Image (cartoon, rainbow, N blue to C red):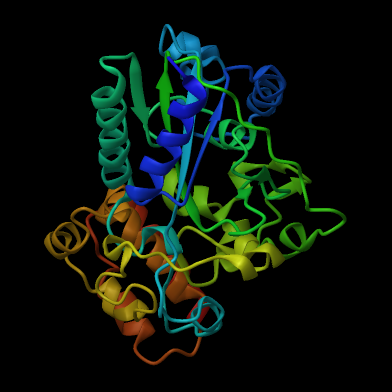
Length: 347
């Protein structure tokens, strides 16, 4: 079999299926494994126990999927066209900021289906082969793999940056037993820039290429199940699900392209919805309106927790106190605690 020609066909099929780029790499992630183990040893993963639960499977693809020789790495742009300006939303304390990746449909299923279609095309061309598709659904060092496959470099904020497309994209992988030719790893181009480090509201980027998740707003509003530490509540501002500041400030994102995927179009005006309106959602409304969305994973309780903090930071906002009082007797102790904190900010 001519694997060079097959690799060319795989890249072409990937683009036809909606991926903006396809790269191929091997399984050597030794240096990244050391970085991961040091990060875990320092406790920077916080409550994300799944980061260490699978041992070395995350950094050794052949342990996760026996027989793996190559990893086909793909990326897909997700920034919707025509959405409200992120900076404008962040500056308006009456509005809720939702990380731009979560405005529309959950990307996991969409990208996994596309990867399956890619695998089906390969099988139709060469016959059955060994593979397994991943989209942030298993212990995979997706950014290191994407870097090695030439899709971009890992920036100082630890997101992947593509020289011609910025960083507003999702990643996915197809582990395979095909001995395909390797692509050249991407070189780094952050230079002396430290804008992402300087803008981080909670100083979560503790050093270049090192993020302490316990300080990160994305972790605090999405991964953390309990009470958000007082020291970070003011810095959270109106960010109710995730944080994009380090990507918004990155100069490479001037090259980012809007997505053509309609599934990533914002739902319920979440690119700039009013905090008071979102805080009024009942649990049934939350479940219904977040069906098929990444937001649903935090549940209604943490949804209210996050918005309560944002309302507490919206001092002087008409209606904020009444909205908070409406939840002061909520059944959840977690919600009550954050509502009381928010009311104290208005007092």
